Length: 153
Image (cartoon, rainbow, N blue to C red; front, side):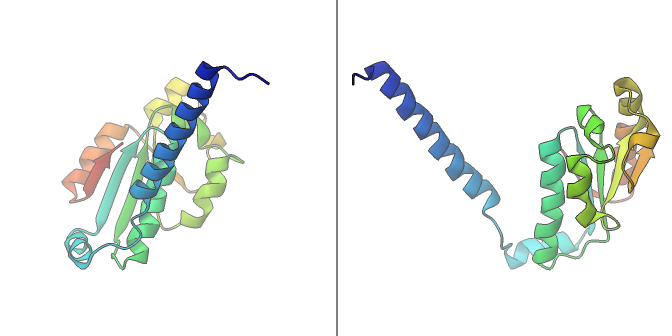
């Protein structure tokens, strides 16, 4: 059986890319233990606010909550402000609803009403535990004014 050298080269490149990606993911998500100085620094401002637009970041920010708790970081408030197309995935019986159940009552999720309107997402279709906010940007400014550590994804 004859295999094309170019085909074999492409296979090798794909395997190499997958290996590099797997290594990167391990390094990025491999930090399970925070050093004591990081924990001490994070204790200074125990309120966290995130604004995001993708499912990946929604899940990632929820997982970061676990990381902080597991490392003994005290959390007073933890809020995710959601805008953009991911709003369409925050509906009843969705994968994100199942994922969020663990965090319900611990993490506040504010959904941008402007994004809901633009994307045709009705309030009654959202799963329980979500709060609607007039605009994501103003909500983030409000969190910052109230001393939250904030990140934008």
